[in-house]
Image 1 (cartoon, rainbow, N blue to C red):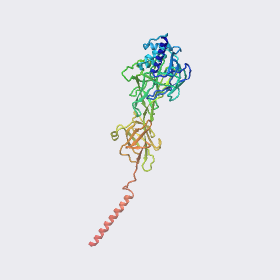
Image 2: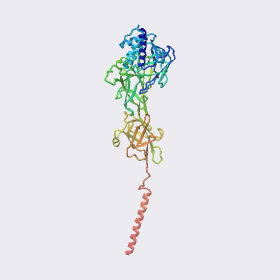
Image 3: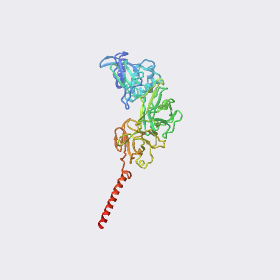
Image 4: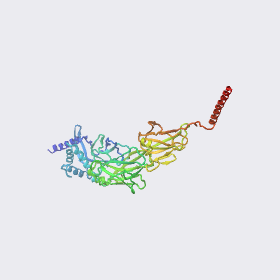
Length: 517
């Protein structure tokens, strides 16, 4: 009877492993010749292993005997310190009756029973074992160490002994460990976890100098189980054309802090989150928002998406592409954290380049004055022109300026143009010549200029509906020939003609008188 019970126990354990979609273990224990390849699960956005650490925990060793078709399996709980205690704790929580004195096959049977009808419970078992391991500093059977390679999507463990392993990637958004059997065949497992990440967006794609841009960073509460020192810090770096401000009105920051708003996407209360971020004392374009304590105390909301909102104002140093980069620093060790690839929000601002020339000679003309309008009606009425500052042919949009006129010069201020205005958002504008160079005719109608975004750093410019391939608006002024006057040789000729006419009349009169006599 004992022999029958033993055989039944072994057969049950074998069925357990098949039910978990795993293959048979290797023939000999502790051969150290097996491999396990861990692959990144295909996700959107794409994930990789850079900065991650993969830990393996071997729950069971196994030996195999017998011939093909009639094999016997013996499962042995890992004898390394803490593994049996971990199994007792997790299995008891799952409602299984095991103790430190239970036999190895009883542990294997209990694991089998967990997932016999419910794969979700198997996953819960794996996750809870991981949590126990982290909280109790269970030593991993094997570890990858921090992976430093770029764009790495798989990692292979070599020289493993046969066994039933749990695979865990540290620092994921949530604990989603995988269970896998390692035997004489090459083994693979696809990660079920994703690394923490953030996504940054802006409320405007193109901007004028002086605009305030609202930036939003989207993240999620990570699972920090077992990590008393879990780090979660958002870093942001502005381009030189942007300055941090406190709100949508452009209110200036006070000291080395900038106001932020943290909120969950659903109705969950986030009022315990920080309300300010710290500006770098050595670089006013950088700030950091430390959410470490907040995410650790919000584990009831792990996995939930939250947003961080803050503001920046476009300044006079803005260029076509103003990149605002945000990255996430995270990890369970403050001295060994991982920083994600920056998420960029691009807010473009564009120039208006003008080539003012003599229509006949094509020479550059100075002293032509212009104003720019956002609406055609304003252009025709000369009202609400865009304010600018600058000199010597180079100007920028400046909402605080009282000047609305920009003026051409005799030499190029850029490649092929002699008048430059920077800091315009994409859209339609009307350009009006308010004063022509001396001796030239002023334009009589506004010119419609259209700026269109075509890519991250690409745009096109149209003049009166026709695209300008070099993005430079050519404006020609003409001057006419000298018209005839009433002085000089013209007056003399008139006098001569008049004299001849008078002489003719006199001769005719005398001739008529003679005939009468």
